[in-house]
Length: 271
Ligand code: HPA
Image (cartoon, rainbow, N blue to C red; front, side, top):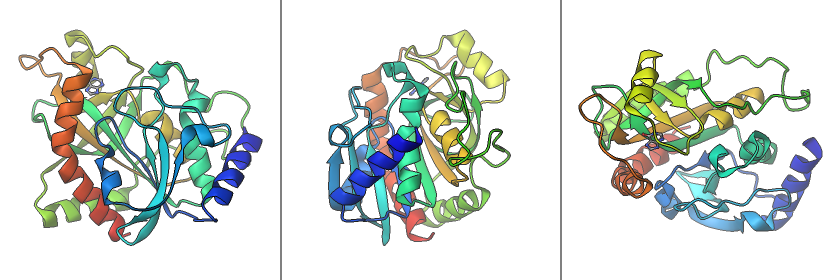
């Protein structure tokens, strides 16, 4: 793993003339529009990066984008790797390892999710305060490489408290309504049954989705502070559950995308 990370990093550094990003961004389904705000300096399709998996799911285009956003040097993944696509957990989190070794000091993530908190509405943004890992596989299982991080990583502050506090202040200032809560990550690709949404709520979740948790675990393994926003594209709340499709998720995400982009951009500017 380590050698493959270094190999990717070496290639990327050559292709970007040693751009050295400060912040990494992983964009969720239907939320790739943030890329339009980036003053792009380099754009590398995943298939051109040695050892990188290649993205397949609709709504993800599969590029690593290097440029300026909010006055910072950033690297953004346009399209992430989901476990349900058939990648191993090691493949899902590989880009997070690479971004860390490119030099990022903060990781920002977004995702589309189902809201199970009855106070939430479709289109809401939720600042992720914590997560529950329900994936059937864990990215850190196997022999630990101490060059990457410790055998038993602490997860007491999976989502950085100071970034959260700053995000709340920025949202208030910009007049953007934000919720806060716990994201539950599970494999998909099925959306949840009503009984599963209820279960997610009972165990302490506010939103549920099919991403983010593996990447955050891996980032924390490497002591990388994380900030995440969940966009609520549908509701898993009794009485409000309707049929959901990937198209609907993308459609709602597109609407909420503008606010999410503003919030992320402004937060990045203030780091
Ligand atoms: N469940 C899981 N993943 C999702 C959902 C959902 O309701 N909405 C968007 N991604």
